[in-house]
Amino acid sequence: MKKYWHHTRIDYDGTQLSSLFAYKSFNVQGDSIVAFRGKCDVTIDEMVDIADVKDKAFIQSKDMLHFIVEQFVIDLEKAVFHQRLLTTIVKEALELEFSERSEVQRVIRSGDDLFIMNRKLSVSIATLSPVSSLIHFGINVSSEGTPVPTCGLRDLQIEPEQFAKRVLDEYTSEIEGIYLARCKVRGVK
Image (cartoon, rainbow, N blue to C red; front, side, top):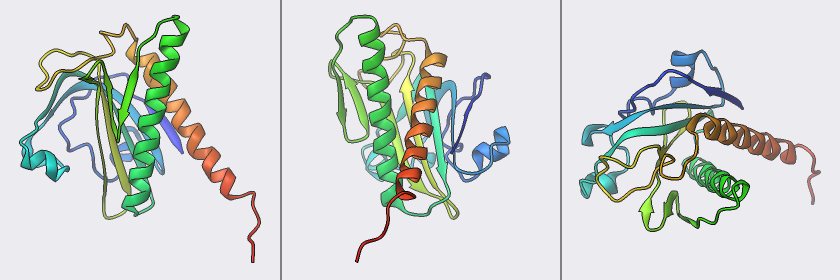
């Protein structure tokens, strides 16, 4: 599992959730998680979550930290498990930030969404391409101009780049640990 932080802003419009995005954009080939910062504006035509399409639940943010995961396994259930794992890693990274500052903030995970004080912190989706499973996880940096009440990293006084790097490290470590755990057990009859 490869990781990559891209320093230049990229606005996310949903088209980035496609096979080989990391390879085409950053020359990162294979199973990967990449992160970048930029606004988020996903139109109905690019939305993958049909429930959101039916509800006309637009996804917009003036400033968001984006993670795109691509793993070359075509299994939607595994993709959703990895999506929930990524969500949990982000939740734990937030809680670690608060504990390092001796601060108490309750982060609530509901499925693949994160909330603080009933304000939405993140968006996420898992899907398949013809060659891989894909995940987009976005966490607000700014809470301005969002279609629902939100909270952002700026509100929480968390520096986005360092936070992204922590999440990249934790996710790749977890995936590598899962792989190694599969490779150390013997089969049973």
